[in-house]
Length: 106
Image 1 (cartoon, one colour):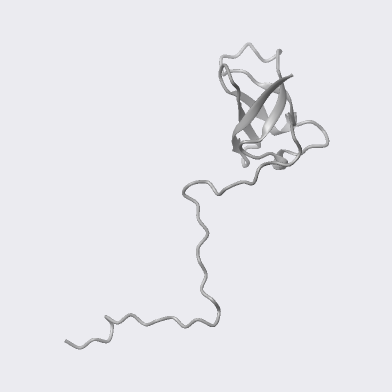
Image 2 (tube, helix red, strand yellow):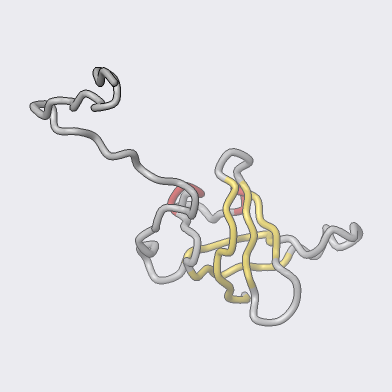
């Protein structure tokens, strides 16, 4: 079995890519994650062990993984992706300030 790192996850499509040291990235589907582990437990940057699917080498889309198993237990803490943010919320007792430009009489 080969070892790689999760490069990209598509949660809505239930698949992802594994980055390897040499060669193209390996595609995997969520159903190939071994029993006892869940696709939702995987995170970007996590090391995994995988087997290449030898039956699906006829197409030219690239290598596919037949079995994927996470290594090392817990996934690394995930940072929010760039471009996503959590909006700040005001304290419930804070009063909103009125803009000063509204009521000016010039």
